[in-house]
Image (cartoon, rainbow, N blue to C red; front, side, top):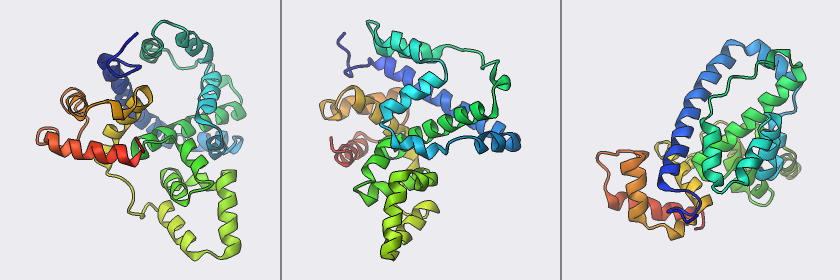
Length: 259
């Protein structure tokens, strides 16, 4: 099926963005619930593997583990075999399933496992919004690139406990590399000035989704401007922005991600 943006139509892109907005609202509600039940969460996570360990996996494998854990693997496999996989996945995302009624009956170890996967997935989405890369990808790049390492730490300081990054820190410790640790400290405390503009997070997420469906180099700036600013209204200063302002941002973004 030929689509305007490779794997998705314009309408499907709108639905994906609407799902993200819904997820964002639910995440805030979940965070409030976690704060109210901090003692229970502490009990669950005491038995769980630190979620930084999931960052060592290729992202595709991590997603398979998430789907399997939440009993969705077969449904997504079936969706992937349909005539329009993207629409089938969107339909699954739109289903209003009831919460797992058996959750309270699960062991603390099982609950910790679910929470660990949830937080790893949430930080991956956050990384996609900020750096247009999954956190798992940044951790992989961090093995040979300190800038990727600092970006990963800025997203989730817990990555310092992931084996590959711990090895890099270990090396700097033995070499007494003060410059490395100063940059690392700034990333942990989020005082490092490289965090891209927060108001563009939604725009970068949309571009990341599209880049997986069709190379951004194949999408004209004017077409992208109309979709993001006029239809999705996901660009800052919507009512005052100009095409030229967006075009410059779009050009810089493509250069940043190497498209």
